[in-house]
Length: 139
Length: 380
Image (cartoon, rainbow over all chains, first blue to last red; front, top):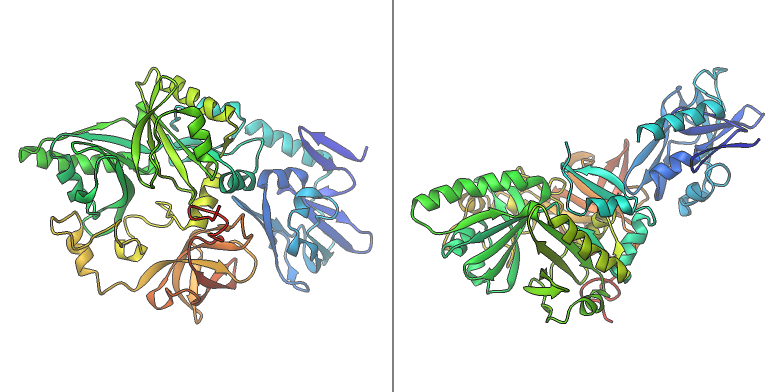
């Protein structure tokens, strides 16, 4: 099983999540890729721009490191742990709709390097799927 | 507790995302379309909006026109039967209580349409003056028909074809005209007004509280059958912003002086109207004191400038963003801001702070789209 489906929303099981709807994927070399979940992009809809904090800068856990701007909403992207931004997805500059088309692959947001070994904010795909279920039940 | 318009069930049936808009449970977009889809339907084809949440006050009696002329800064003595005019209602300080449209059906029969969020406030305001006028022996009567009527704005370049399919009556042709027509057996008040920058009609049906839902939905369904695209508040906002129309509460309120809105021109306003109007003294005495003004802008980098963001010139905070979005037509980030009067001319530069970063912005004209291709004056 590589994904869980909650209603219309796909949760990939090959990565971890934040309760605030970001995914975090371990690249195996001390770096992590990050993006937003399928659920998050469908809730934001019509993503028009992603603003990043600066590459090379250090952030504390839960600092805002990027902002996803949609026509009617904005979504803050939080640092999952103490980290440095090492790369941002430049493709999004001209094609922000990639986040909508492929939130888990080509529509990733950025790459970070962990500056400490603390994964306590991260949750499993299964745990994230139940967060979506809870949110849907509240709608 | 939110209110519902007579078209609430139509929105639910179309599986709209609903939101609390100024106390009304309203659609923000429909299930089968995005905001951009709905926006482009209006720019290129034809779309419809439920605007029933707005206030509709029916004012009759021989002194109505004189009374309304006192309430607003526009000279409505020049209106004729079947004409409508956009204007404002001011407080005594010259601030904006609301922006409204006054419709003259007959010399002694008028309709006033105000914003949804201001219904009670405007009713109370008008009523306070009406009481005084009536004590002085003036003859007019005000009736709130907001909850017993519906209003559907049908907008877009293909609108006339749709309407000609629905009625054999003569439609009002010029902008800001109003006429009774029949669609099937239903009398419909049809005005050539709108909030999109496109040709269009606003259709109103008046009934009673027991039958209005049924009549409203019947009209909505007739338009649906003609493939008019249901459009909601999300696209209503992007359409009005591209066209440069103000949204009360965002772009102006009681603390915004008429002269700061830049809307103080003929025919919306005649500040030296000899018959006088509420707020006139304040407006006249403020004439040489205006130091900030509403302008249109586009960002010179990516981002969306949203309501309340700060405006800077030379690192000094000098103003604020009223509204901002990304234009679905040009894809540019656009908006309205209040800036120093020294920066009101097209091409003037300032900065907007977006999440701790200052982004360059330039004053532009409205509408922000190519007017030869889109909007009222397009070349067909």
